[in-house]
Length: 193
Image 1 (cartoon, rainbow, N blue to C red):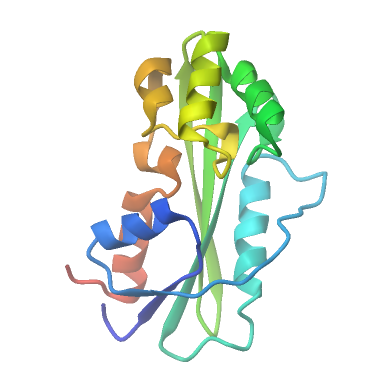
Image 2: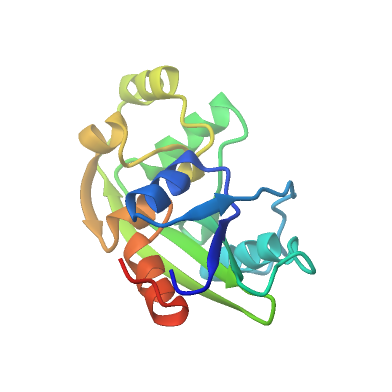
C-alpha cells in the first residue's frame, strides 16, 4: 500500500474483519475514550465529531508513514441519535422504535496522518417491518447485540426476518462503508490490490 502503514483504531470485530476481507495490511491500535458529543450536533455532525475525537487521541504519536483510521456509527431516527443500548430494556425500546419505520445508519471515517486529517461519511436508509415482542426478545436473548448502534446487526437473524428495504451501502449498516474507505485509500494513499 504505497509507503503508508494503516493503523485501524477500532475494537469492532466487524470493522477488523472488513479490513482483512479488503486484503489490507493493517495494525490495530486502541485508545479508551468517552464517546461524548455536544448536544447541538445532528446526524453526520455527531459521527464526524466522534470519529475525529477518536483520531485526536493519537496526536503526537503518528509516524511519518502512518495513517490512523477511526470511525463511528449511529442510527438516526426522528431527529435523534440511537447509539449502543445501555442495557436490555433500552435495547427493547430501541428495537420497538425501529419497528415498522425507516431510519438512517450514519458512519463517519476519519483518516489521520502526521500532517492532516480528513473525514468522510456515508448514510444508508434502512426500513424494518413490524417486529413482534417475541421476535425482539428472541433476538436480544440469543444474539445479544448490545455492542451495536441501534441494538441490531443487519447481518444477524433480525436482518433476515425484519428488514424490508435498504437504500445505499450494505457494509455501512454493518459498520463501515468499505467501498468508500477503499476508494479513499486508493486515491490518497496509493493502494494497489
